[in-house]
Length: 84
Ligand SMILES: [Zn+2]
Image (cartoon, rainbow, N blue to C red; front, side, top):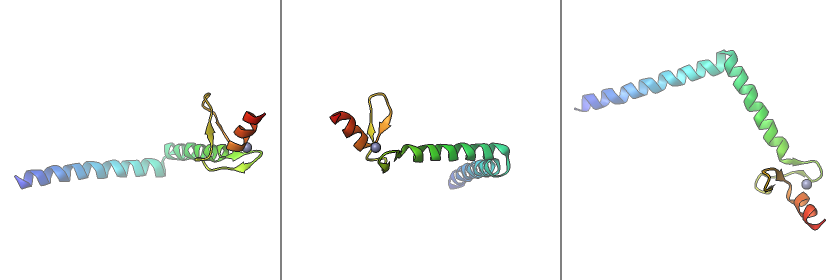
């Protein structure tokens, strides 16, 4: 009985290892990997740009105010908008 369980566990480990190796090769040595990395870089820079208010400078994502429309706004700009 323990041999069957061990065999099952080793099979799952083998599948996971082959999957990880496939992912590593895909991400490191193919144009698909380059494309995914470039997309990830764009998302990262877009996120960083969202955190910088052109008037008040950089803000933490925890400080930002989400409007009902879904856009995010710097808290100082939101206060200025509210107070007129
Ligand atoms: Zn602002």
